[in-house]
Length: 80
Image 1 (cartoon, rainbow, N blue to C red):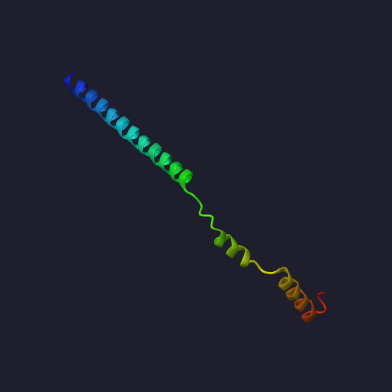
Image 2 (spheres, rainbow, N blue to C red):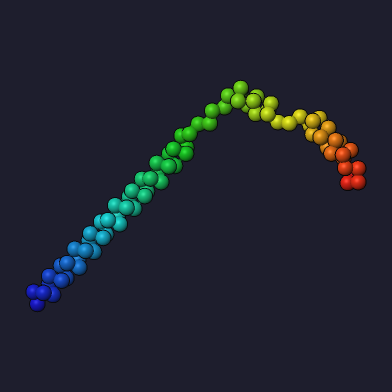
């Protein structure tokens, strides 16, 4: 009888410890998700006029693309 009570007490203790561990991990997971969401919301994209001008300058001019296409067609007369 005493062995059964001791075994039952051990099982209950193990279940309580597992429950507390899982609850702790769930709380940590929720805290991490909240922190990630907060970081995502508070990130501010730096919009400089100079950076937007640089982005526009880095594009290839349509005239250059037309010239490249013409040179390719002239180099391969059978394809064009």
